[in-house]
Image (cartoon, helix red, strand yellow):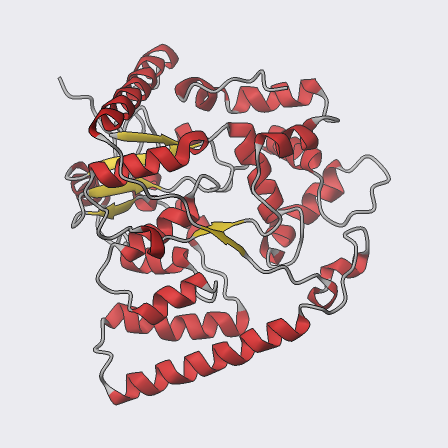
Length: 378
């Protein structure tokens, strides 16, 4: 007997975190390019060639300007002047490619068995936790559903989401080389292109039907490691994340700072206190079980950040996506200050009270249990 799935109307508050915040001149260039993507125009038209040439010229000039400023002033994070981008060290975005290898049939079978074990574990824990059905409206509106390539993805932030935003774009027919190059140079945000291409402007029942026609996957990582990754990306430094500082950071510092710290931004401990006391979840730190609803949507592939290279290679090979996602086209965005590893996490939490970490565990307990993560990492 099939399980009942409840779908309710989407409210405006559910869609709040889909707001796109412009980034001055870069954003203007992007909106020009977005119109090209929207209309799927022919690039041989003279007017389009002029627009593209002008955009490339502007981007080249700004790139040269960035190179000039690379050696300009820097200011420690403890200074209030840090809020001004003039005094911030310009750190080029880091890029890396994950290894694309052909997996043997025996290896494919071994990984498939592990994936089956992960799915059974989730199903078993869903029965124990008692999470049988859930409203899917918000989850479906966030899903990237590619019926053409028979693949749908729940984009969990801070778990290889930038990599797979790029992958879904590369799988489409629309991105000419110059758009791919702009994404590589970080002049064009893949998230905005994805939202435009896979915008869910139909009713949720139709979205659910389309998703069920495809294979589904999600990527998870250790919940506390993901929280730290979100903190380092959105809160640790103001530059390029003024929105997060104005929306959350200032209030966190005013409400939860109890020491003589002169740092403008919130500390990781203050960020955790904010989550514990206010239970407000942005998409970058919302629990997996709430964002992707794994007890209602039965994902075909559950990838883990800890075995990401192998898991991605398996998925790409199993879904016959090799011709779209060959290694030379794959670029993975990373925090310019380095990847958040278990060793980095240990350094950040060494002075945080165990009682506070346990409170965080209770909030994300379902994620730990569903995806077989341990709280005993210290």
